[in-house]
Image (cartoon, rainbow, N blue to C red):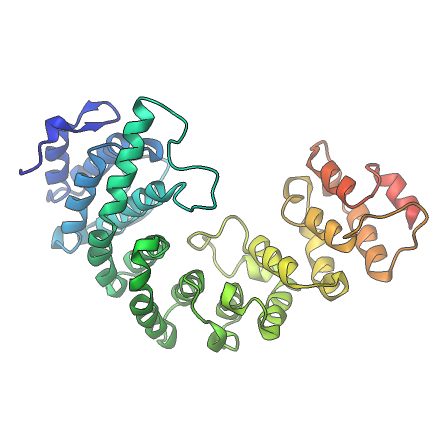
Amino acid sequence: MSTEWDALQHAYGSAEDIPPYLCRLLDEDPEVQAEALGMLEMSVLHQGSLYSSTPSAALFVAAILTHPQTSVEHENFFPWDDRARPLRAALLDWLGQIVESASYGEDPTSEGEYGDGCDGDYEDELEAARLCRSIRPALYDAVEPLLDDPHPDTREVALGTVALLLQAPDLAGFVPRAAHRLRSVLEADGSRRERASAVLAIGAWGQDTTGFLDDPDPAVRACAALASSVARVPRATAVLLEALQNPVEADHWFPDPLPHVDGWLRFTLLKAALDRVDAFEDLAPAAMALIPLASDHTVDRDWGPLLVKAFPHGHSPGQPLSVAQRELLQAVTANEACWGNIGNKFRWLKEAGLPEQRDVIRALL
């Protein structure tokens, strides 16, 4: 009530209509709650855009996270998301989206800041992003206790939101405390998904994950091996290569993708392995396991980078092929799915110094 909502804006104009939706988040009817969150998603966080009303709405949501009424389970208001989970988890997810949007362009090494180079409405959005960044400590204080929530869905989303928050430079001081908390999760007898998510978060914060490279669970070992802190640890590289030699199993460790893992897990594992292995020969057994799963659609994330790794200086006409190079080309040309009508493969073939035609590559063998 102390907020001048009529002086703030959302996607459709004045934010004076926001308070009723915030109050309905605590309604006794789950459908009313779901609709209220849906309206907030469409207005104060429209397609990831931020507005002057977003920070105030986010602070209200953060303040009610532990209210008993947010533990009620229901489906999303929107038909394309039919997950049944506590409202608390959905609210945490929504806060995480705000945090992610606010952090866009914040990295000084990135090409620009949120809204740079634009006028008018974009300048307002840039100011909204700055305001959202300023409330991150308050959001963290509200979210961190939910890492111990009794519901696994809520714990998972809380972890994802905490991980996003702790990527912010102004929250770096919270990392040791959060990492200590997550180590207790890893040492407990939790689910594979929960433990893997915890070690991924710890690794993303730059914390040492060496102690989990020999975890009894291969999925946890692989996620520990992805941390930048163990990039030069031979055991970590060996764990990645071991997982990649059975990529189908690795892809099915988690029926739903882990937070912040884009696509099949094998793509993330391969990217890390390519960065760490010097000689393609060390990667060759994993490559042979990956190529049968490859296609025109995956070339940018599997067989394209593998070709460049196998031919780091490009193939020259008449140059003899090594055993590993020959096996790779045999596998790629034998896979019909890699030779459809999508043109992405041609840039990789060119970078590797190889012909664009499948039959011409076969002639090299």
